[in-house]
Image (cartoon, rainbow, N blue to C red; front, side, top):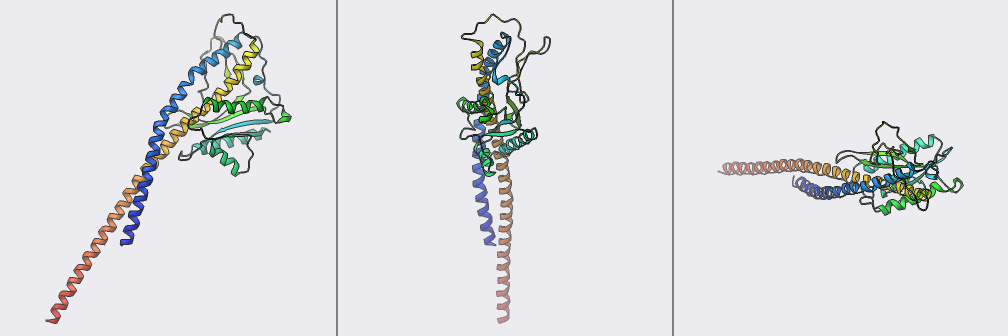
Length: 321
């Protein structure tokens, strides 16, 4: 019985230590989610101005001739940007993103395309390396707090492959898999195509609200009809303006995915750590009841032994008389 008490007390101390860790992780994630949401909101004015500038170029140009806007006659190779996490304790966050990436990969292969993976996050990199798959690019160390520079590095690498000749490893399409952040309790892994961009003009009378990249189902750049525009002269030329704006728009789409994934990772970690903390509390209560029952049984056994010994002494004393 004393051995059982020692085991139960040791388990209670171990679970209490685990509870302190999970509780600390929950509080840290909670404090960082607010900053992640603020970064998402802070990127919206830049997106609005960037898309507005693209609208002006498209509206004042009779023709569009840019490699990032051209649909390839036959797509045989596609790049996949997979956004996962660097750390664990985030529930099924990385697993869901990897699962969505595998679904998209299988779909592209069924269409006859070779998939070229670009992976962000140690979880995704470890998944591909464990299975012996080659990576065209990998980035780690910033998934919780990505910067525009991180997105620029990814965008430049992917754009280089998109603009390269097919014989030199060029790709015909670029897709991204990220986790869209809806709120603190709802996040969803999504896939979207980034390149080639598709330009569409809304017809008069339809809704002309600009659909920014925050919409998870949005997969194309829509330039609505915005009415009469002032005469604009581009210096040195509209082609060079478009050359500067379209890569920045691509980088912003990647940056938006990184910000969404960062907020989703923190929300998933908070939820997972809260669940672990609650489970630890329930386990501590159960072990405490078991320890109390074992202690009560030990006390009852000691009393029984004392009473039995007293009865034996009384019987021995009566026999000697």
